[in-house]
Length: 331
Image (cartoon, rainbow, N blue to C red; front, side, top):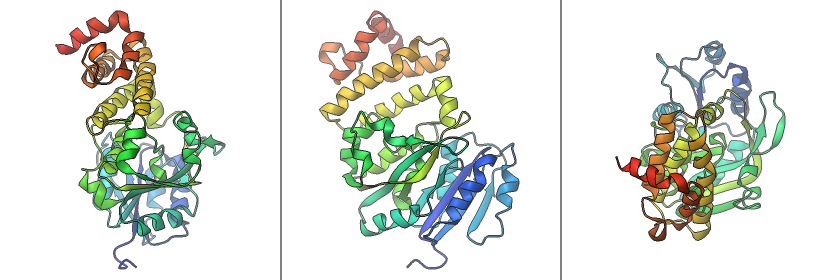
């Protein structure tokens, strides 16, 4: 048992303008059946009623509240701030617009306790709308990779998970579903604060690449909220998601050699993502340029000598423009 002043789990709730969801979020933490935790509430200069709601919990001895003096503009700066404040062995970043089953910690803590080599453990997630209507499982997005994998519990080798899946897609679909070791998070340098949307994906891959195990629970104990004002929704509208996607793919490819299946999926995914984005009139030119630069960095070779043959798919889709694109990316 951890000393009373050193909780087993540090729960971090980073918030910005999610007043309408905050009470449900915080109450779902406080009502956990596993109670050996501290709760760190962060606010990044919200302009709604968030701060008064957060302040109403100040009397609970388990809770610390930290208000920023200036907006950081970054979810992942808030993650890193919260982990710096944390004292627990394990960390749960409970996003402010999500909520949880009361047994989430009770289920995930023993996985890390019994497997010292595990870097993180996570559970299945429901999708839930702004008005709390269930909309299936979040892992429906992963069915083309493996229709059964995320429906049942498993243990996986972290590096192998990167080679098979994390090299081309974030398969840990909700930060709120994850319990991770604070020491490992610190060892990999925390979250990449230069990323707006894909910092979570890079964080999970970084931790997995340390060689530890990843645990998964097939029971849906997390409720992932989707709504029009989420960071994901805003970033998709600006084309930022595609730019950061390519940035993380490029980075993971520098760390591992993907399996043949993963490489084939990667080529198709990249083609389907960046070609429509590059042609879109709604995506800013700077985003298009950054995206094309990443494509060039991933594979600057002619098709016949390609390091990643699956990327030939991209070039075939965009063949009329490829030579000029490559020439521009050299400058």
